[in-house]
Image (tube, rainbow, N blue to C red):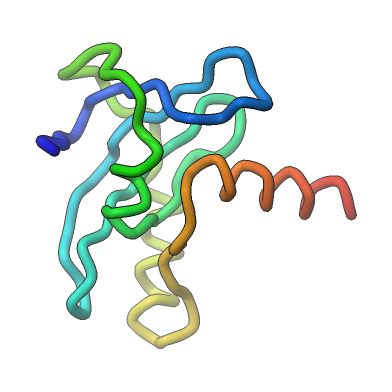
Length: 107
């Protein structure tokens, strides 16, 4: 799958009408292919293993879109990742959305 920074994709999230994600950054770190994404109305920065992102995507909506401000979230994640205290999601985007909503509802 030809993922590129700035692409907006519709993803499998049957609990929502139409959900979109934007590709923020692609990189390989510590042997993992990581896709950094933002999810409309849910999260501004999430690092996800590439194969799980690819399993989640339904349809390319558009390309070459401006990126939302994600650098602060990325920088915080990057610092903790380098310290071995942050990881990468290894679940589908639908599962991530459910997880995040469950966490938020417990607050």
